[in-house]
Length: 80
Image (cartoon, rainbow, N blue to C red; front, side, top):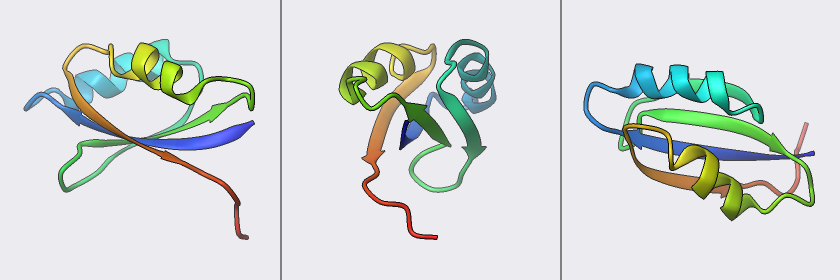
């Protein structure tokens, strides 16, 4: 499994609705946070190594109602 982080920008006033729908429908989500700044939510997902990240983001996250924009961060190594 490979972790990715996706920052999500929502329509004004819709972040909680987006978060609720995402948690109900996207099984790959491990953690979801509200954040401040240009984006409203930070989503941590674990994907199988053979899963296409772009296809996952565009089909599972960008299609959620009230999502305006996303920024995907692909991880390489975890330092502990």
